[in-house]
Image (cartoon, rainbow, N blue to C red):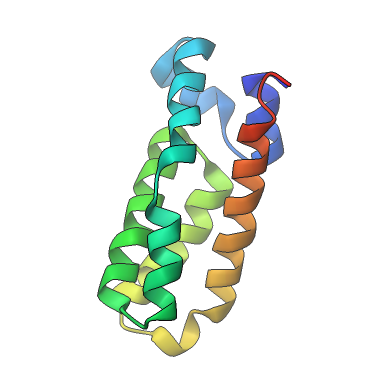
Length: 116
């Protein structure tokens, strides 16, 4: 799978990220680093222990990384979750947590298929 196909599969904006990075190799280098980021694990652990301040920070980090890498689908869901957590609306997050999980897994799966 090419980097452009990876972006198509994950619901990302390849043209946007290409306009910033200018080379597929550079894009791929940073996309692969996403797999090493522990923010999603921290988000899950924090939500499980009801540590909403830490969950907010983790969701916010995911949002920022996704914005920088133009992972549009995951950016949108993590942004919605971030805003609910920022507003203290913990009783409204379940559907958004599920969306982030689905989008995160889709993104990771697409990245893992690069150059296969």
